[in-house]
Length: 439
Image 1 (cartoon, helix red, strand yellow):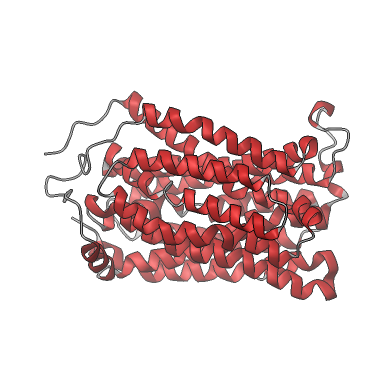
Image 2: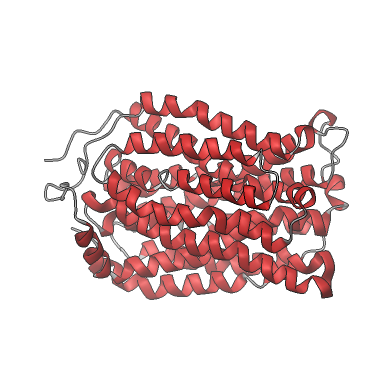
């Protein structure tokens, strides 16, 4: 028998506190994008080293520890796991502020990845147990607001705090803020009954690892969605990490003029292009990201229950639609052209989150949702974070002799192919979803 749902008020609070935690997840994850400019100068790093620090260092432990932590989450308290994860990644973010060289910063970012490995998959499982199937796409979309909010705040706080206090203080302040949230989360977040809002035949007893593996192997749509999302994430994470540097390098002199209307109290006396780049890109991330994620979840809840292929076709259409905006934004010579192009690109590139995350929760039984989500996150983040940042940085370094500071522009432009691959994988996967859907 299905469990009675929590009150609307408490379910609203659950989403709120989960979004807050996910926001800190992305603040600590993405703040290095805006801090890359002063870090490169202070520690004398190359673009390739920056990409290793910002991508691979985080992705290594984040991806490999995610699956064993998720297996634990399918058997024990998800709220305790998330509390511990938030505490660890926040403490390691503080440690980033004390790094004196590339190696120390690399190790600190590894630590951030260790903590964040337990921060997302358990949350997906919690949401599935607080919201019925017909509301999950929207609930998961609201949860995913933590991505644009956290990314925008990471970029904004990084730029502002660096302008006033330096990049080391930026790491320390945001890390301490996350540590302050951890006890609030633990004391107010209740552990729901596993599978309580699913059908009476839903399996809730702990699943064996071999059962999870055999279930996922038997569902080609899981792998198609995972690889499609990972392909798009190569550019999603790559853009978040590299666009602040791109704006500084290619539009440095134009950025202050773009914000000439801004009140003086928001601009410190020593403000440079970095601060204006943080304002510029944070606005794009916040507005574009929230609009795109909500639209994707709303469309999925509207059409997905009757036509399962919509969970793949909606993201595919969005990725195809990104192409002209991507090219226009990257090649633009004016910020007034680049801003709307990147705004549309940001919205369309995140439409996939609600539909795809909902599909993952429905392709398996409740007793293996956290583990299945962790397998997806393993694929998505190892490829998306670990490879996407590195490819753009390496291409930029290889083109520097010919294009100077503009090398990053053309390195980013080359990545448009990954959105095309993502769309193709989702289109191929769509017909299989109905067959693989869990009862």
